[in-house]
Image (cartoon, rainbow, N blue to C red; front, side, top):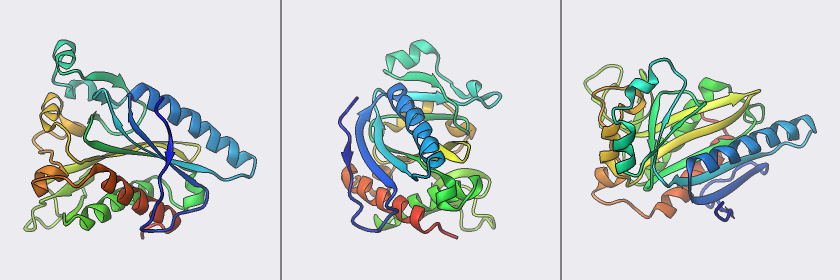
Length: 244
C-alpha cells in the first residue's frame, strides 16, 4: 500500500471530520479493500457518536476496466481477456452503480467515504454534489462543463441549441455505492489518460458518446497535483455547504 499523505485544501474550508489522503497510484483491488474498511469504520464511528469521513485521491495503476452488476453491463466490454492483457489492463467486477468504466494513470479518481447524514443529502443530491465539484474545478482551468440530464457525469461541448443541454464529450464519470447512508466509490476525472483505452469499452454504457480529457480540451493538462488540490478543495467545500 502506498504512503498516505494529508492533502491541505487551501482554496475552500471543509468539515473538520473529513480526512483527505493522497494514495498516489494504487491497484483497484487494494483501493477497494481500503474503501470497504473505511466505510465500516465510518458506520462504527457514527454508532459511537464520533463523526468521521475520508476523501481518497488516487490514480489506478495498473489500468482497469470495472463492470457493475447492472444487467447487460458485461456486454459493454468490447475487448476480450487477451486484448485487455496486451494493453496491461485488468478487469474487475464492482459493486458501485453505473455500468462499465475505465480507470488508469492520468485519470484523477476521488473516493469520498462519508456519512450522508453529516452532509444533509441523499443519493440524488450526493451525485449532484460530486458533479458540481468537478464542474467548479474545470471552470478554474478555463473549461466550461455541465450536466446532461439524461446521463450521469460531467460533459463539455454540449449542444447549446438542444433545449435540454444534452450531447457533448464526457470528461468525468461518477459511480457510487451507499450502504446505511455511508458512501464509497465516487468520481473519475480525465486529466491526461490514454483515451484510446476507452475504445475497448462502451463507456458507462453510452454508445456513440465521445470521451475527452483536460489535456485534449486545453492542448496540455495542468499538473495533476494542482488539479488534485483544487478538486479536493471543491469537494471539501461542498461537503461543508452542499450546493442547492
